[in-house]
Length: 424
Ligand SMILES: Nc1ncnc2c1ncn2[C@@H]1O[C@H](COP(=O)(O)OP(=O)(O)OP(=O)(O)O)[C@@H](O)[C@H]1O
Ligand SMILES: [Mg+2]
Image (cartoon, rainbow, N blue to C red):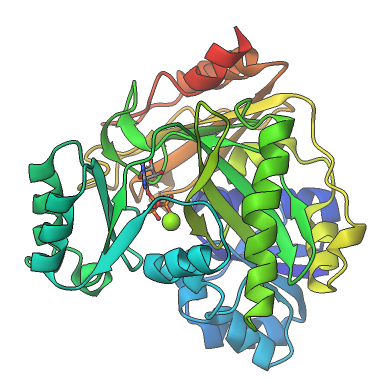
């Protein structure tokens, strides 16, 4: 059996690694992959990025199923291309993926289905957006409607900053077409968590909870990034919160999409804001697994991921069961110099520890060059470790981090702090 994973980040390294481990396929292809996937036995990188070329390849090689990692391919309708040819692929159609690719679509959808989220208005006209901000108490979060690779959201603490973010997007065109329509949203207080499920159009299988660290610096300071570290489980997602999220957010979303004629198949990610009063609100939907949340989540997965995907593709997720390692997994992202604004590439990486039962270093922005592994993107590696509790997982992860070197390496020292507070 051959499988295909699409993407090149840490998430895709983790997906391919998990699939190869538990399913014993003859091969897992990763398109395009990175130096980490190239170095794994049984995993083969493919220099392809075009949906049609990928579908041709999958047909020729008799790939059993394909899994899509990044949102860009979903936005381009890769699932529609495969399905039209009768090829199995796990991910939502272009229509359903609007839950992620248009924040305005997502907001209207949530309103239609009574899914709790922040109040917001959508604008294409800057003057109207400025008036709106002046007439409400704030603070505000200004969001580009379209995909902006993690750079489309500005959390503002002053009115001036909100006005400035509006002009950046609508007047100065800083984010191009993605920011030519914006949402001005009320700021939500609380603690964030990531809630990822698998869906088969009607049935839902929740995966283990997790928490990401968006800001570049310790103490949640500095600009937002794609994510500087994550752990699973997230203690803030108590059984009560879990039940509430399923009841108020996930079920209405999956049932709502089906009722609107675009049944959702794939990983569905709800970004949550959990209030002190136990309320949950939806910060965003993503139509894929999170990166870096995938790395700790899959490190804990004891079920066969390929069996779960197979059941989902057959519409039988109601018969699936996900079993998790009782331990905590924690991943620390090592980023390149200049990340997130201007990541530097081509720095040689040394000291990456080999895989053990407790440690796995997933590659993201890495490439092979002149016999060396070098940086090739913003987020370079995700050092992931298992431990009896958050404290142990963290100690093991950072001991491995301390062995790795490359010029300009940036990472946070406080991954897991929120959970540690809960554990104490
Ligand atoms: N209404 C809000 N109140 C408070 N913080 C918010 C709000 N909306 C967004 N944020 C913060 O901004 C971050 C990014 O927002 P959001 O998830 O909508 O953007 P995104 O670019 O789609 O993110 P991702 O790259 O994870 O898909 C959130 O994780 C959260 O920290
Ligand atoms: Mg998003």
